Amino acid sequence: MTPVSRPLIGIVGSAGAYGRWLTRFFHARMGLEVIGHDPADASSMAEADLVARADVLVFCAPIRHTAALIARYADIAGGAESGRLWLDVTSIKAAPIAAMLASRAEVVGLHPMTAPPKAPTLKGRVMVVSEARLETWRPWVASLLAALEAECVQASPEQHDRVMALVQAMVHATHLAQAGVLRHEAAHAGDLAALMPFRSASFEMDAAIIARILSLNPAIYEDIQFGNPYAGDVLASLGRQIGRMAELVGEGSDAARAAFRREFLSDNHDAIGAAMLAESNYSYERIGYLLADLAGREALSVHLPEDRPGSLRALLHVFERHGVSLSSIHSSRTPEGEVHFRIGFDADVDAVALGRAAAEIDASGLGRVLP
Image 1 (cartoon, helix red, strand yellow):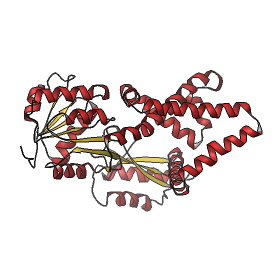
Image 2: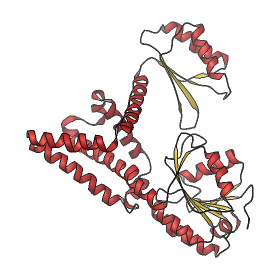
Image 3: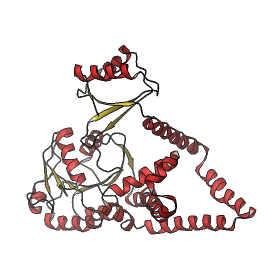
Image 4: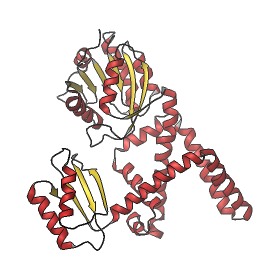
């Protein structure tokens, strides 16, 4: 079988969050027909029919089930998958890719480093790409990656899993441990809501990450820890570092302070390097400025229904005509995917002039001022 310019896409796990997002993406961005199977969807296509019909098969199953699921599909295909393309979007790469390589299909592993976004593409997000067996489908895969608009980074399956033990497993574990400490200390210091008035920028960022993790599918975070063969060693190393820090702080002597400075500040400073420290510190400052802007009380949120060049300029001209100065402007997306602009003003903004500007925005049809 030779690749076709407009392949039929099959999604295993079509009822899941990423399956639904990918279905919309393939329809809207690439104009492709999508079929799928999911045990949670009684109306979905039978597995044998999906394997027989799909030119490109995408596996979007939970981490713990993916490798066995792929093996079952290879058995169902029985060699008919030769010349076709199999992809997966799992947070672990070695096991799923090994299972796909046991088939006769061409194989690429994908890992979008984000939950399914509200946006139509992965623009602004990173995606890891593991090319395991790719020949005749290479031009089509290139077009797929271009349409996704992600910042793609190439990695072998083993490299991917080792990196994810740090980038995902360690980071999630750190924040889940913080959540546990907050839970245990709540009786003495108050719960998270009570702590937020005392927040630093760092605490607010950590609290946001904790809330993000605890708001999404817990099975994903469980599988990222238990499904990555390198996570256990990384978590043990993290535990040793925290234990050593607690030991030094508990000792409290001048020698312990000197060891703390050397081990946790100086040695880590030198290991990361001046250039990376400067770049990452600047990123922190930018996030801090954003949090400060978003904390401002004087603000309007506006939805511009027409996605066309000049819409934002026209909106800003309304404020100019009413003599209202802006202190900040940021865009975000609602859960429904609408782009909203949050426009901040100084505390001494003329409330009457601001009200007139808001009324004009609504009346003109240029935008919709949100409550």
